[in-house]
Length: 480
Image 1: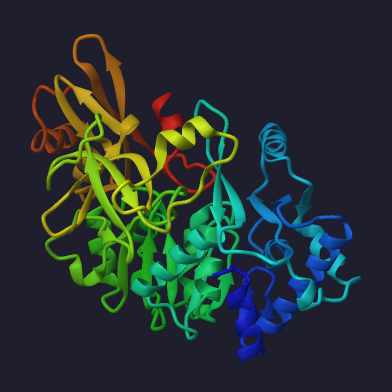
Image 2: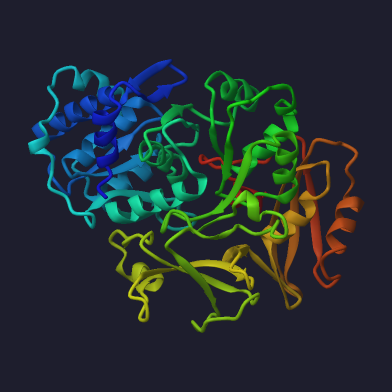
């Protein structure tokens, strides 16, 4: 499927149906209006000499104009690169790395489309499903960001596979408060338009105080969030005081979704389905835990999405047995094409499976898979603490500490130690000033060997620092 097809389909089938609502500016666009505006922007791009395969950077916050710009690119076969207020150095690097032909800021979109007629259908680019649709640059830590090359086929497959589980329909109203430069935010557009649903845009999910009323006012049925947002909402206790009769489901990915937070949401919102998920930009979504499978698999991130498979290997590439911990490999049509201009890194992680012929990806994340096929996240290679011969996933440590009722947020980091290899340092944000270091250590050593040294516990008076995408800023906390 080409990504423009669902928008064009619903523009014909349900032209007056509201496609997008910008909750901040109270703007709306029907499917026919949005399709017409994207055609006008496509005409503008064509007039500027942008053609099939050209790379176009789109900069802006969540807005209808952002969506118009990206679909305008897709209609003429250009490859869009979504960014949100990038630093100058990052922008310059991405411009050079992608060899982009244009940089579009969303503030200009409304003015531009006012001077154009929509691009006739016959002038739309002739695209195949293997043509590139977009490039998402992943965050760099010590190195420059890498551009993940995403063909129409992989994106559309992932979208439809996810929708088979969460079951979006034209009746849904899906909130998107995650940055569209972040694939979890961006894909809410595709997930919504794939079924003719209504997408409700918010600038951010960080203003937790306003979130429940926004969910109620906009009659949100689908609520994608990050675990840090879930923790903050639970801490606010506002969900208990805000009726949300329309809310159908919550999804979460991007970091560890602790079981005590999942179960608290289940308690407060008994009629809402909770979908813990795991994914990475290189294949969009790996697995989803369906609500019917939660009991008995509480710490799992679910099974591979429909039409895909997964297995674990050791460091020599040998497949491991069930319940053995190793590096997760995923296979299927959702695996992207690789990294832009990074043949070495692409060949090191992306390959074609010799038996199935499917594209496969080495995730570099540690997992185990049980006898029923459920995936259990252990941690990333850099997020596995090796202490006194013990290998402990940071995610596992955080889940244990998060079981303490007064812990709102926790981040574990490994600190190099000459004798132990590594020792553990914990950052904790607690909404209860009575939480003591002794209580935390007791909880830790109830689960882990005494050989593993808890070097330090740092209590924070405010929420732990986050990255621009709302994840825990582990780099900053490691240096704290």
